[in-house]
Each structure stands twice: as C-alpha cells, then as structure tokens.
Length: 186
Image (cartoon, rainbow, N blue to C red; front, side, top):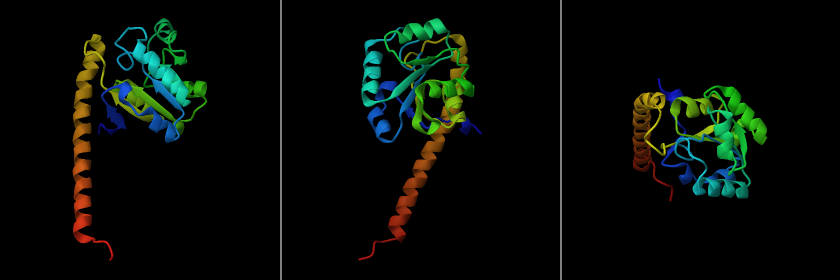
C-alpha cells in the first residue's frame, strides 16, 4: 500500500553516500533538497556542504538544488555552492525534477535524488524513476506542517523496514536452501 513512498535507499546523512561509486555506476547528475538534507533548516551553506559540492564537481557530477522554497532562500544558499537551482519546485510534482535534469543535461537513468522527506522528495523522485536516497533529517526541530508529515512518515517507514527485514530473511532462507540441496560438482 505504501510502497510508492518507499525510498530506494536510506542513509544516515547526505555526507555518508558513496558518490564515487555512483559515478562509477554511470550516474552523472545529482538533485539535492536543501533544508534538513544539506544543512539545518534556513541555514546558509556550511563548510561541509561547500566541500561536498567541490568534491562532486571534481568527480564530474552536474548538481542541482531542487527546493519548494522561494527564490531568495535557494539562491542565497547557492551563492557559496555554485550549482543549478530550481526553486518553487512544488515537489512532488514532476515538472521541477524534469527541469532540473534539463539544466544538468541528464536523464532519469543517469540522475540521483537526495532528500529528507518521503511525501515530497522521495515520492516525486520515484514518480519519474530516479534512484533516490532518503537521508535522516539533520535537525529534529521543524516547522509544524513538517512535524505533522513526519508522524505519517513514521508509519510508512515502519512498513518499509518490515518489508526490508522480510526480504533479508527470505534471502537468507534462499541461500540456506541452495546450500542444503545443491552442492557443487566435483
């Protein structure tokens, strides 16, 4: 029921993703949400974010900030980063994601999305087939409308974790079954 909201991958932080591996796997563009994904809500780009984007550019990635925030917030954050931007994106609407890929000259199969919210960030990315990463929000203190969404997200994430545990158990069982019934030829 909730699978359309399930992320492809969950990670503790934007800064814990193996971007080099993504590049080796053929990805060339990365879309990022800003608030609570790269920095705390409303903060300017910190040193960690600046270093991340310098590293991504060095690897050869095109990057784009895609945010539901207003132009001023997105552009102020981007002054220290210097990547493509999409503001007032109306995530999870598809249009902003497509526009971001157009700016980066990438396609869904070569683009990755990184964000902290299921119902806007991840759902929007999934709607157009982008590989996506759900990151743990940087700060627990958020605006009231986001706090309410987080309560619903917990329900979906509980289902997601149960599904992942079940898949893991099934995989172990399959491996065990293969070992028990199939032995390699001498």
